[in-house]
Amino acid sequence: MKIICIGPTAPYKGGISHYNTLLCNNLRKRHDVELISWKRRYPKIFYPAEQLDEQSKKKISSDAMFLLDCLNPITWIKAFLVIKKKGPNLIIFHWVSPFHAPIFAFICFLTKYFTKTKILLICHNVFPHERSLFDKILTKSVFYNSDFFMVHSKEDLRNLKRLKNNAKSKLGFHATYSIFDIEKYDISKLKKNMGLRNRVILFFGFVRQYKGLRYLIESMPLILRELQLDLLIVGEFWDSKEEYINMINSRGIQNYVKIIDKYVPNEDIGKYFSVSDLVVLPYLSATQSGVIQIAFGMGKPVVTTNVGGLSEVVASGKTGYVVKSKDSKEIAYSVIDFYKNNRTDFFASNISKEVKNFSWSKYVQLIESLVAGGNDLK
Image 1 (tube, rainbow, N blue to C red):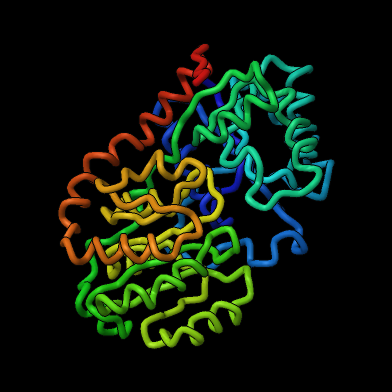
Image 2: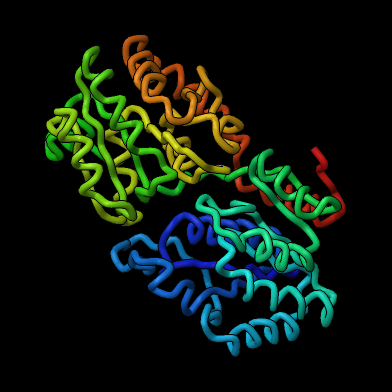
């Protein structure tokens, strides 16, 4: 097939940029693929953090045409004209936020009625984690003219069917990130340099309210009654950092918590996972998680919650633990069980087998099957 992907790539940072880039690179193994990316993805008012990754020396990048400006409709027309001129069989959009609905709806409408090109939406979230009054209307405006839909959880498949009952869809998965280095580190030396104890649990990624970090902090006094360890929090704070520091200090656990408040360059991601035994992601809302797939790509087990599609990826008792959302006691019991019953090797062995189910080659085959006419109505 001739395919045009529309989405971010380097120098844009974040999980969707990595995902889109890896998807394009893997599609290119079997298809003729071009990438249209952003000149400006979000205005500063909607995305307060720095959008570009100017730190990473190891770029996760793909050849791209940087055409789209979220605030300039002329660039939307230019993107459509590229599609019309090149005449691909398929264009692929990444549906993440209703903010981009006017752009995507515009391009989808013109593509639908003025070309023979089919449209696939990869739905990372059918609806955003933090909802607004207009989400449903904006989402429908894009979904109406789209031909195919890939979702990453059963919950999102249900959400999709409520919006578009006859949607041609596949229940896919968030593919694994196995691109970050982990084996090159002297872990004992690295822990010593970072001032970490022998046992370390990790929270990784943007700190936002729906990520549930407060419940992990609440679990720490219960964990520390049973064993000594450090909680390593790594990621940019979108919420008030002071609020979390107050939570930590009020519980008297400040000597057991280390915060790395920054966006982590690609070449350093493996460093934080390598010093950690267990990744804890106590999300309040999610469909799937890129951090889980980074962890699995490095053989690390995960404690996560029973929201969205997370329990479809983490097999509780085999590759990690699935606990109730907002339940700090269950988080604590899982961490304690992991260490007291020496589950590291058992989980690692299971992850090495399970991770094959989340390969990029399988994901590409799902796209091919969907576009060829397969329809998953589960």
